[in-house]
Length: 267
Image (tube, rainbow, N blue to C red; front, side, top):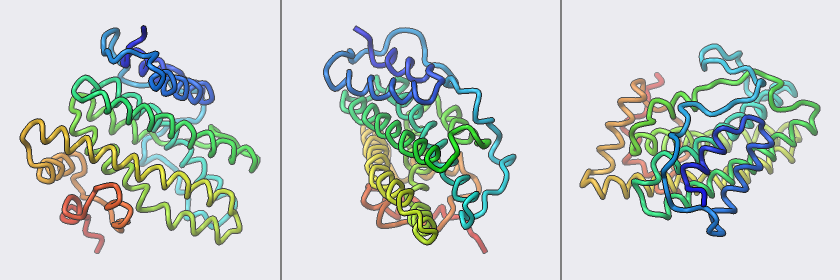
């Protein structure tokens, strides 16, 4: 029977976007049905997932300015960027389960395989929307910052949880309400509905990251807020960008005592 790490590795090594969606859903289903063993043997997970030929990947600072989604082209660019985030998030979830699952109870794999299936669904919704609007995933360049964050935390479960779900995914909670409003103002209710659905799921995802970060700190006898702030100062030396969606963050267990003192001064 395939183990957790091998199942996660299979998703990570799938390059084609639609095949990755299918692989993610299949692994999550097989885990729920008891067809995957709670085992972490086999070859190591890849340092970098397989990627399709498109989109062209650039460093974050090399990306063209998208604007704020006021024009039709700007909204397409925004949907493409969000699709890319969800595509990479599939790998982030399965990498978390396969790379660090042996440090946690079985429920950790339950959570992150389920998150990976959610991210696959999110990507499929956005990819379908792009196609409906005459574009597709890969039509524009995308940045590789999310996986750079994963690579920087590949040897530290607490750092990965602190940086990926509790900062990068939490940032999505902050910006989605304004993004939804832009699509609604442009009369694109379909895209707005997709983003609202994704945002509701992301609260659960940030919540899973926060819960397991707390669990890991408790096992090590470490104060979680102080540890989180130490890790974020290490990885985000310029501070975290406000404004913050405090209510959505609190719904995920990520309260202001974690991040308020790390807010970047924007004056």
